[in-house]
Amino acid sequence: MSIKITAPHDSLSALRTAVLTAGALVAFAGNSLLCRLALDEAAIDPASYTALRLAAGTLTLQLICWLCVSERASATSGKSALGGTLLFLYAIAFAYAYKSLSAGSGALILFAAVQLTMIVAALATGERPSPVEWSGWLLALAGFVYLVFPGIAAPSLGGSMLMMVAGVAWGAYSLLGGGAANPINATRDSFLCAMPFVLLCVLIQLPGLTVSPTGIAWALLSGAVTSGLGYVLCYAALGRLTAIRAAIVQLAVPVIAAFAGVWLLSEPVTARLSIAGVGIIGGIALALSGRQIASAKLAQPLPGLKLVPGCERGRR
Image 1 (cartoon, rainbow, N blue to C red):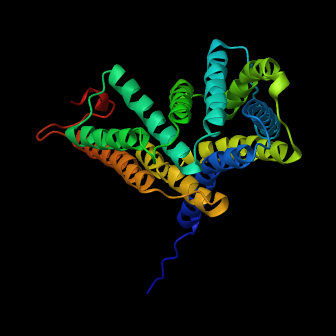
Image 2 (cartoon, rainbow, N blue to C red):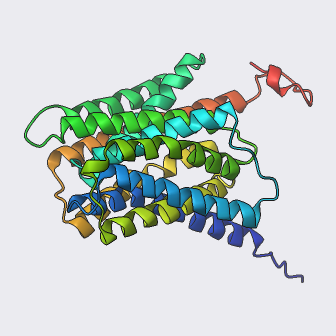
Image 3 (cartoon, rainbow, N blue to C red):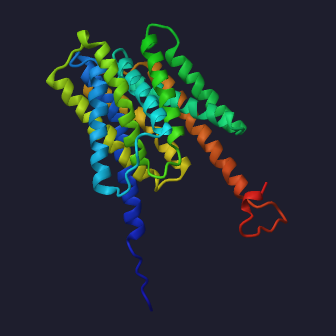
C-alpha cells in the first residue's frame, strides 16, 4: 500500500492569485472612496488632488522599477505620450466628477463607460458578438441609461458626463497599453508624461486652489497605494487569470465602492442605483459568459478534422 503525497504548490498558487486579485480590486475601488473623502468636505480641489495623486503614483512606480526591474524604458516614446494624455484625461475628469457623484454611482458609470469603450473597439476591429453577448450588452446599456436618465434620484448630469469621459479615456488607455512587454515601466512612463498636463491645469486654476493637510493625505494615499501599488497588484493578478476571469472579477469593483461609500461616507443606496447596478453588472456578466461559450465552441475541433500541430490558427 502506497500513500501519494501531493505538493501544496497548486493550493499556494491559488491562494496567492486570490490575494493578489482581491488586493487589486480593493485598490481600484479605493480610488473612488479616497477621492470622495478628499472632495466631500472641500479638503482639496480636484486639480490639486489629481496633481498630488499622479506625482505620488509616479514616485511609487519609479521606486518599484528601481527595486524590481533591471530594464528601464524611456518615457519619450509616442506611445507613452499618448498614454500620458489619456491618463491625464481619466484622472482629471475622475476627480471633477466626484465633486457631485457618490462613490457607488461614480464607480458604476466609470465601469460601464470602460466596458462600452472596449466593445466599441472590438466591433471596430471586426469582432462580431454572439446573440448572448448582444443581450448582455443591451441589458447593461439599459441599466446605464436608467441610472443617468433625468429624475429626482438621478446622479448629477455634469458629474455623470465627466465620469463617462474618464471611463472612455481609461478604456482607451487600457487598449493602448495592452500587450506591453513591461507593463510597470509602461505605466510609470505614462504617469511621467501626464505630469506636465496636470501641472498646467494647476497653474491655470492657481487663484482658486484649496489644499489642506487632510486633502493632501488622501491624495498621496490614492497615488501611492490605490494607484501605484494597485496597478502592480493588478498586473501580477492578470498574469495568473484568463482574460474572461479577469474581466468577470472586475465586476466587483463598483460593488465594493458602493458598499464602502455607504459604510464609510453614509451615502444612501437608492432604488435607482440598485436597479441600474444589477442591470449593468448583470448585463456585462452575461456578455462575458456568452464570449466564454463562443470561445469554447471555437476551441472544439470540427467532426472528422484531424488537427496538425502548428496549424491551429487555420481552424475555422
